[in-house]
Each structure stands twice: as C-alpha cells, then as structure tokens.
Amino acid sequence: MSTVDLVQGSVMAGMLRGELVPGTWLRQDDLAERLGVSKIPVREALQRLAAIGLLRFEANRGVVVPSLSAAEAEENYALRRLIEPMLLDRALPNLSIVDLAEAELALSSDSLSLTEANWAFHRALYRASECERGMAMTEILHAAVAPYVVLYTERLGGAKHSDDEHGAILDACRHGDRTAARSLLIQHLDAAAEALDLYLKEEGRQALRWTRH
Amino acid sequence: MSTVDLVQGSVMAGMLRGELVPGTWLRQDDLAERLGVSKIPVREALQRLAAIGLLRFEANRGVVVPSLSAAEAEENYALRRLIEPMLLDRALPNLSIVDLAEAELALSSDSLSLTEANWAFHRALYRASECERGMAMTEILHAAVAPYVVLYTERLGGAKHSDDEHGAILDACRHGDRTAARSLLIQHLDAAAEALDLYLKEEGRQALRWTRH
DNA sequence: ATAGGTAGAATCGTATACGATTATGCAAAG
DNA sequence: CTTTGCATAATCGTATACGATTCTACCTAT
Picture 1 (cartoon, rainbow over the protein chains, first blue to last red):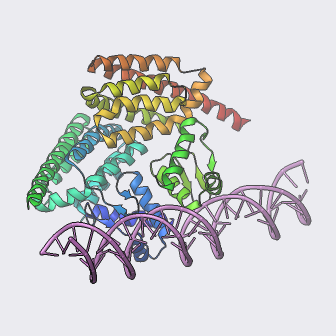
Picture 2 (picture 1 turned 180 degrees about the vertical axis):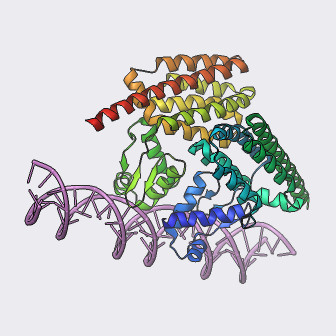
Picture 3 (picture 1 turned 60 degrees about the horizontal axis):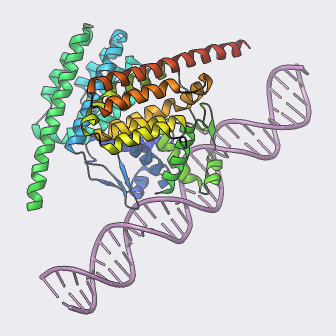
C-alpha cells in the first residue's frame, strides 16, 4: 500500500467517524507530521478526495470539508434512491451466506462508528452486484453525508429506527424477496433523507438567528 | 487556474479526443516537460483522474488508461440510464433559451471532437437541473467510454444516427414535452450501449484470435 | 474606539533532488 | 535459437527546499 493510500484511508476514517465536521480546515503540514510523511503524498491523497467531492481545495488557502446545502443533500439521496435499488436488484440473486453474515455483523459491530457500520452493511448487500462503478459512487454519496449523519443521529439520541430498517432489509434479502427488499430500501433512504433535511433546515434557522445575533 | 487544473484539462482533452486509447501509459516526466511544469502537479492531476476511475495507478509502474470490459460498459450505461433521465426531468422546467442554443451549437460544432460535442450537448440540457453531483458523475461516465466511442464510431464511418437522436431530444425539450424527451433519451442511451457492446464483443473475438495467433 | 495598514508568521503550491523499483538490451549458457 | 542473468537506463514515489500567497496581531491615524 502506497503512502498516498495510507493518508487517504486516514482522512476517510476521520470523515466517517465524524471528527471532520464540515468547515474543518485540513493543514497539510499537520497531517504530514502526524502520519510521519512529507507533504507530497498528503496533497495527492487530498486531491483524490477532492476529486470525488469529499473535500474542496481553495486556492492558496488549503483544503476544507465542504458543508452541504439542503438542496445538495436532497440530490444526494435522490441519486442513492436511483443507484442503490439497482445494486440490490443485481446483487440479490448472487447473495452468498458470507455476504449476509457480513451484513449482519455490521449491524451489531461496536468497533465501527455509526456511519462506518452503515456503509459496511449496505456494501455487504451490494457487493454481489459486481458493479464497481456503482459501488464507488454509492460510497462517495455515503461519505458525503457522513459528517451530518453523525451530527443529527447523536442529537436524536441514537439510530434505533435505522437499525430496525436495516434488520427488515436483511430479512427480505435472506428470503430472496426482491420487491420487499427494494421497497424497504427505498423507505429506508427516504427516512434518512427526511431526517437529514429536517436537521439541515433547523441548522439553517439557527444560522439565521446567529446572523441576526 | 492552478497548474494541476491545467494538467487535468490537458489529459482530459486528450481522452475525449480519443488520443489516449485504453492501454496507453502516461509518462509523468513527458507530460511535465510537454506542459512546462514539474512532476508534482502532474501527479496530482493524475491522482484526481485516477480517483474518478478515468486512469489507473499501478505501483511503481505508472499510470495507464484502463480498458473496459463488456460488463463494465453495460454497467456504465445502466447508471447513465438511471441518472440522466433524472437530470433531464429536473432541468426541463428550468431550461433557458441559452441552454437550448448551447445544445444546438454543440450539434453543429466542428471545432469539438465527437465525444466532446456529445458531452457538451448533454451537459447543456442537464445544467438547469442544478444537480452538481449528478452532473459530475455523468461526466465521469461519459469520459470513461469516450475512448471506445471514438474507436467504434470511426469504424462505423460516422455518427449520423446519434445526431438524429440528438435532434429529436432537442426538439422534445424545446416543446417542453417531458415524456417524449425522457423516452427519446433512454432510446438514445440504449442504442449507444448496444453499439458499444457489439464493438467490445467483436474486439474480444479479435483478441481471442490474437492469443491463438 | 474603530478602520486601515504593515510587519511577521503560517501555510500553500511547485520545483528540484534522490533513493527505490521496474524496464531494457546484451552477453553467456543451455 | 531460446532462455537466463546481469548491467544500465528509464521511470516512479517521496523528501526537501523555497518563492508566493494568505492569515494574524499589533500599531497608527482619523
């Protein structure tokens, strides 16, 4: 594994963990020193993450975790609503016991952060689709909202609701029930989209109050 | 515009122009010298393009234009079939005269290469959707097949068929006919997918003959 | 007191340099 | 004639270095 991969993984993990909240500036020298490498591979990793929209370069100012508008969040889930059902459809006939076990494991893992576990669950169910591009796009879409998912679930005091939905989806997959799995997945995505939308609008109101001071 | 952007644009253009056929190796020093810059921004640009799947880094060997399997091509068009109708749907109510004019211009432009013109046409019709991420994903999907589209259309002796389809889509957009535009777009994508699939299967047969020699 | 300006520090972006890895060509052995 | 081994060249990946830009804190003038 190259040094660039190391840095990318490190930043990505921080993102899924919710340590890198939107608006955070990433100092290249800091990252380099912390990981014991030079700036070059750090910058290359940041360029990779910026290319997929997870970070943003601002000329001569550095790299920042971009914040999401309500419209962007809505688009994010609209895209997932299109792509993820396709992945599940294609994966369903080829789902192995290993895939199902991995998905179940992700539900009960406590070594993973919330968003890491969420993506691990979905990835396990989608992998058998063998759609690499669709998987990559979906991972990007998951990661893009991860900072917010961390924020709003911790404010709502947990993710029990989401866990129940995951369980229902997993059951449908076990029984090979394509139509049920598909509609449960779409419901799941719509619920998440709704929750995020509420959070972002609330946050917007607060920001407004701040500007009024 | 940063040096990295310059390099990225240069490589991207070569890709859309069909100069960079799959299997081509990109030498970092060559690129740097040709553009009058050092290797650092060159590598950063290549990392960006690799992050979105348009290039592939091979450890200690360099960067190569990846070749597409028939399955990957099929997935590519399956994704476009999902995303692009959504973009057109969202754009249609907001299409301006400027957008329509730009789309028409792309059809008759001879300063652009075939694939550049193709993307310019679709982008003009999608821009009003204001879906940045969906646009970015679509551009990636277009670019990924561009090297092949160049190859198979020049073997088929032109793109008249595709031009007709573009004209029909544009007309439907002018009349604000959402269902017609949508179905014409899907037909257009299916036709392109079919043509590429045929080409790749034929190419596969030839490769087989080569190995037998 | 506040706006504006000016060092100085911090940070960025790119060039140069160099060890590490891989490709290439040629010689010798089978 | 083909294959193996090695020396050399080409290329890659990352560290260091440095000018350029931006940020910060303090100072001055209105």
